[in-house]
Length: 299
Image 1 (cartoon, rainbow, N blue to C red):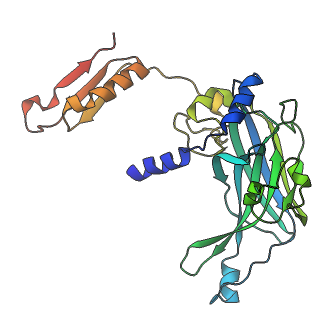
Image 2 (image 1 turned 90 degrees about the horizontal axis):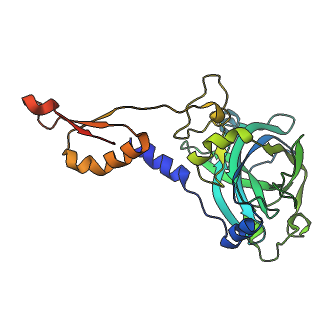
Image 3 (image 1 turned 180 degrees about the vertical axis):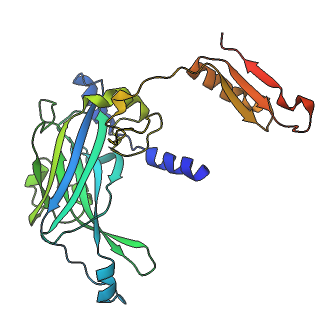
């Protein structure tokens, strides 16, 4: 259980945006957050040949082919600042026609609807090792502009073909890389390599935006506390607008520890639920008073 909560905490950490960018968005009357959907469909381009690791035979490479993964991060071009949380797609293999199908659905909500806020997508090759682990190697990156000068999504309909560039996204931190970044000489396009994706507003995300922070990229099938799994087979975040509240009249908490130590928890729970809370004390299982209940009223 502790590992689950630790993993949830690690996934929930978000790097804050630049303070000047936040102030600029507030001065532009962008105080409310808006939901968006990004679909990373497929990557076209020549197969990236990876050097064979020392001691690895051709037979092993055929049994364990290299897989590719997309890593998505938010980037502020004005201040050369990565923020939010990096999202990693599921690994996919490259087909014989030099295409990797991802169909990764990404959601986010943000109030920083500024032209300087972009999404950087890195292509990572996952090479299998003899011990079962994987070696990650960057194979290029693409830049997805999210908002135009009119603070609207750059593309609301149709697909976009993004050019892939050599190197890693850390290239964008070079002092000479400034807007417009695509025209900078330090960015060298990869011949014939493109990432096909789409971007559009997602109003259905509004009822669930309070369940995860702004500028946090989440996957469509990610487990978000407070959002129930979809019975229709759709993505969890996609059906967030279909969730409905539940009223809880009584909460019973069983504890083997002194009830006094749980009082601070009970206050928070009853304020959230608005109903009475019962604590069952099982400190003395053999005693007749072992099942006594302590009620905390909320009225």
